[in-house]
Amino acid sequence: MKPCRLPVLGLIAALLLAALGQASPARAAEEVVYQALSPKDVMEILLLNALPAELDSIPGGGVVADQRVVVSDRIAWFVYLYNCNDQGRCSDIQLRTAFSGAAPSLDAINDWNRTHRFTRAYRAEDGSAVLEMDINAEGGVTVGHVSSLIPLWREAMTRYYFDLEDRSASASASGSSVQ
Image (cartoon, rainbow, N blue to C red; front, side, top):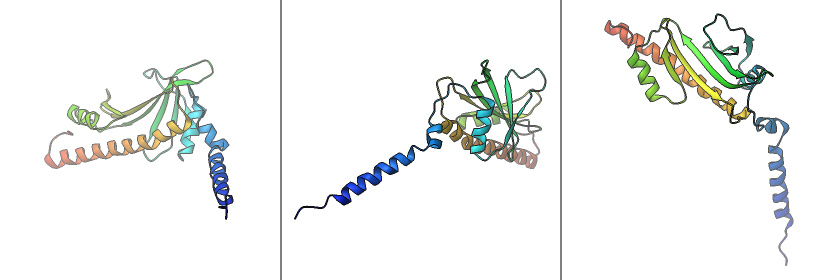
């Protein structure tokens, strides 16, 4: 008696159909490589992460960014777009938040920067505790890659906030300044 090959062929067909299903139009759009992103592209990526956002003008002359997007989240943050071309597509993107009144010490900032990857912290001239994360699209990025960085950023931002709060509470309990 010959072995039945139909189940094997059916399995192969099912695997091929499943693989083809992975190449859906939405999935294909995630895999397009972009050399620069527009503010609209950034806002769509934020929406993929359930974060509404809107384009905003940049007040004052102290910021060198070309565009700014305000993100509606539990902690206020912005997306700054730099090195924009004539079509409004930008190769450098910066995620940024600032906590006023925190005034972290140099030791606290150095500790954060030493122990946390992908972000950088510093104290602004006004004493605010600033956290930033850069995304460079110049070599090419996909929507999926940029979208995957948003939860990483949000987690870092939350940790930074609580780290500042913990240091402030410790300093208050010991009667010293924020460390």
